[in-house]
Amino acid sequence: MPAEAYSPHRVLVTRAVHQASALGDALAARGLLVVSIPTIAMEPPADGYAQLHGEMERLDQQDWILFTSANAVQVFAEQREELGIEEVPCRIASIGEATSRALRDAGLRVNLQPRSAVAEELVRSLRTFARGSRMLLVRAELARDVLPQQLEAAGAQVTVAPAYRTVVPVASQEALRKEMPRVSAVTVASSSAVRNLLELCDAAGVELLRSVVLASIGPITSATLREHGYAPSMEASVANVEVLASELARYLAAHPNRR
Picture 1 (cartoon, rainbow, N blue to C red):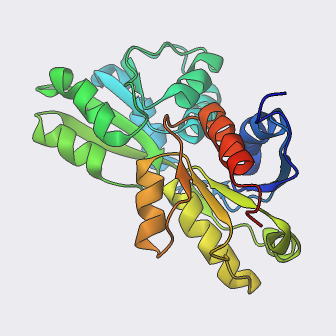
Picture 2 (picture 1 turned 135 degrees about the horizontal axis):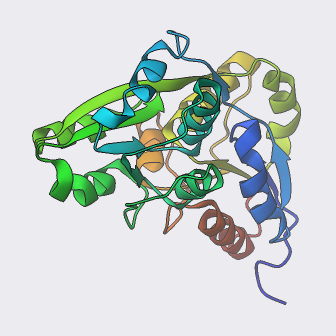
């Protein structure tokens, strides 16, 4: 039997409700016991989609639309239907496979996807097209500014349209108090997940113990953990949920005494 086929370890999945199933399913398929407690909930941006709607009604003025999360794709698709927009004339760039899958599911063609799902790689992939191009970045209300800043430095005109904002779900506090003492590992799949997990721990009066395995999806998320004083126990070699699940299962199999 493969080393990752069974494990008694309980793994806390911290993704938003609508995202948790993919990672949870991948972990469960490898014999891990999954506890899903969302640390992130999505709400409309502060302007109630005003800027996003305005930009979506002027898509013919853009050369590219950039998506850095499946969340942004979901909101874009919903608002596109609400506005009755049939044609998306721009080329589309996606940060990674999960975002590309969401785009395909929404009936949108992906023209560019970098090898690694981080903003810096997306910049490198787009730099050839940047000079003189008009680019619309659809993203969370609060996010890193690496992408627009570096693309503008390369000669692009970048417009940022907030599609959603992330908040800490109050209902998760009691679940976290109950489950945290029993989990072997916690997965974090974004910088906002790290921040919201720690905020949720504070609100629930729960300590994120140093003995818990912290499984990070990639280097940006790992850097955010370190900024908050936590070292990731492991980092996925490729930033997607299948790789994270597989490598975490192997890590826990190799460290059976963790928790």
